[in-house]
Length: 77
Image (tube, rainbow, N blue to C red):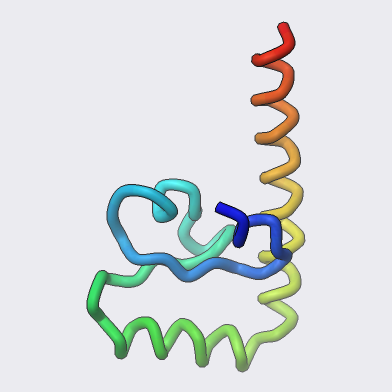
């Protein structure tokens, strides 16, 4: 989960784990497991849209900070 601290959109495979933390089109993208073509499409899309990478990364970082504050308040309250 360390990758989530980076201000970059995530590309994850569908399934249990990281995919549950990535909101499609908001904090990153999901691809089908084993689908190299779909993965390459997402990578090329993000390379061609650097401004979108920055925007999604900032949004993801803000969402992560809110989540961590929520978890921290639950553990101390």
